[in-house]
Length: 438
Image (tube, rainbow, N blue to C red; front, side, top):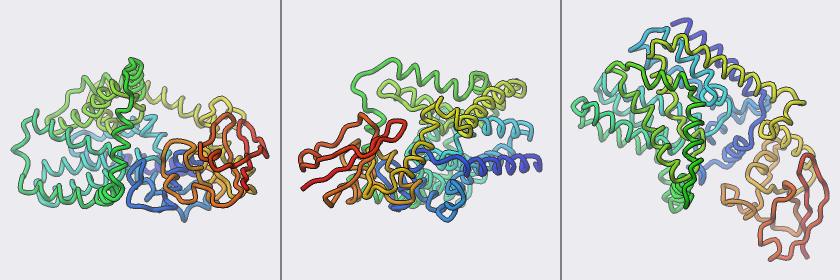
């Protein structure tokens, strides 16, 4: 067990160093803006990611260490998994599971990027751990803790609701109903509702707009395209890795861990079904991955197969780090180079005030890197958190807008008789416009 603790601590140290060195992505900067305007919840997502950034505000002078509270919470997922597995499998299989997690593109390197995925994975695995306690200890405290974990998971990301059908299907098909102490179930429900109350209250106060947005976002396309399903299946096989995927399917699962089958495959099958309705982003089934990897280590050949997994994703991680830290290589991937472009853009536009961006990504990044509020111009792109700010619409007779060349302007610009001129162009494709009106 000492070796596992050492591996856990060393990997945490590496994560914290890298998290401080890598600039925040545009989406991370957006969640950071949320942390500067704390609310019970938000239009796009529940509030946990903003709360974690808020806890890291005192670390902002240390490069990008504002990520650290979230990264630490994400890394605690591994420790909870260790505590769960050590009751049923040997230490060698646990060590193998840790390596699979650390080299997973989304659970490993991806855990340096602070999004709602990070806390929801932690609370998903914690909920599995608490559910195991419910089945084994059968005491009131376990049922209460189970509800707390689920409630906090709902404050992280709405995907936690998939835990309920996973649980119900397990109880149904494995005939475990008799192991439930039904008189304690109301305690689980009550603590769950209590700990997700901020999200419920915010949605109640705002016409449930966040719930409606997420439902529309997942089922938004009127016509089916076959590539949605094909790309979803191929992406999941690649992310999980073919050998690991096969091992998880073929593993002989002991009765004490059969619930992992449901927590692994039900989310993957659910999003497979939604791929017939809309495009599914590759990270949406991320809650399934810890359980899939747990199933995989139960396969006897995984001890030799995992080397291919570590080698493949180890090379990819090295390539990504090279692109991040070698300036000459960043141009090979515009998405990787984007935070550095925004960082430079912030320094070159700081003198233009009041300044607006043409997207939440741009406005958030300029705000984060420049440490001075920059708002998205209202109506210039889809509705988001910035559209709730009164500052999102200029109040005076002059303002500046930085946007990507070719992007349009909102209709109210012409309706209110604003005129504009280009005052600066900035590589690679940014332009600063000055707007005035009589």
